[in-house]
Length: 166
Ligand SMILES: [Zn+2]
Image (cartoon, rainbow, N blue to C red):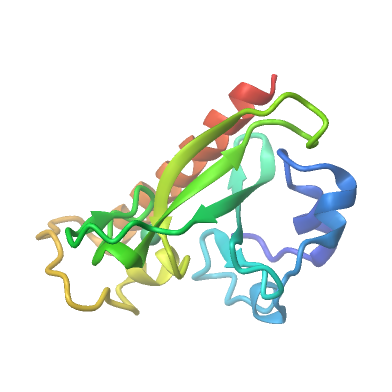
């Protein structure tokens, strides 16, 4: 992706107020990304780790969404991240709730999803990190195709939130 600044990242959020976006904790490593490899941004707020953020380039420019991780119920089975399709043990994937309203004053709406708890989807897609203890699907795609697939999933998720905000 194009190198981004703190200001451009904060401005990108579509489902939180300007004030809330200005208070999001962004670890320095996020803005210090290797922009050639980092095809989208994802992180948890260090001060409140249940709050997670995803920012990606879309047809409409840089778009970010805020979401809240729900504690996973340990069912024992493997779970799949809907963005990078990595398979994890049950705690490796978190259920997230993504508000589809701009401020908490609006009537509550949200969409749900299942996303890697560590938000390392970029690393799992690039193969620089592997989920522990769970056998992965056999992949026949090239790395470039896997990047396209993950980014497409991210953009679709952002679009589904944007659609509900209208
Ligand atoms: Zn993932």
